[in-house]
Image (spheres, rainbow, N blue to C red):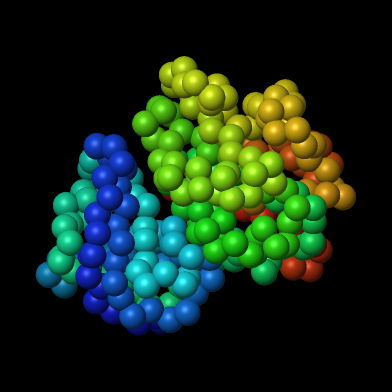
Length: 247
């Protein structure tokens, strides 16, 4: 079993009343952009833990996690109350296969996410290797309300740095938001409106697609892509679609 180490909060970023990020100092084993580890708090003899993806590229001197507070949750309300200087437990060994080295070659890389599941994709984009491997990068982020479109400074910097090679498409499902698409990601794929917005088509020849979000979104988006002729990416049979549930 992976060892637990003590971490210390060095910064807390509050995005909305329920969305926040923690930057944590801890001595962890090397990890890859796209992987996740576990955070925990000790309560007597009980260790309450949950998995979270790294938002930061591995080269940063801290580890960043993007969280949503679940009001009746066992862990997130307590994590949300942590302040700089407070301690928590971090599993030292990361895991997960939603990483760049698991992808076959392609021309276009689509990163489709909802909510806090945008985290691993931000880590990959900030690291920069994706821009050396793919000609076109598309980051899609689905949320309920406009205020949940976080990490805009990082996204804007990527737009400025990579220009037309990087497309960012926000989706807001419960209110109108200038510049954002309405509705849900799978429906937009089925209708072709997402592809029209981006100016690229999904194709088995050119597309690699990574999906990270709630299980319903992941399942429905995969079905939409399979209907367009794409295939699941498996080690024994390379394809186009790589997925991870993030709930």
